[in-house]
Image (cartoon, rainbow, N blue to C red):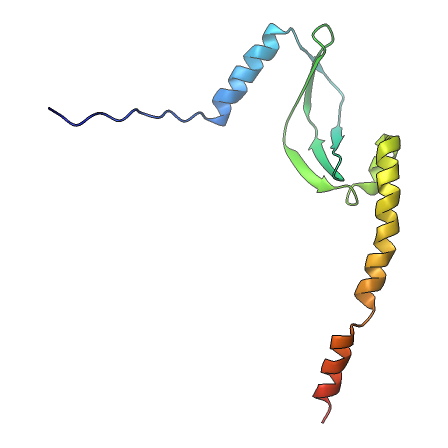
Length: 125
């Protein structure tokens, strides 16, 4: 007999997934929401998922919101001046903790270590 044929694996592309998602959203009767310039999703670990000029779709009857576009994961400190008005109570407390840790890190990096001082003494003839 002949050798057994291997199963052909079909890889999905992102465009196929996107088309399937759009067809599912169309079944839910979502409407485009215009005029949204940016979307920020703040995670518990202090990072922000930032969408610039996203396509936002909503279906209030299905309690569904879809945000599509190019997403960037950024630390909350990078987004700080503009994101303060968007922060809730939980995020503000985590931001305070981060602010308390920040001066300690700066002081630790500026203080010379005892090893560094010994190395400087070795260099002098």
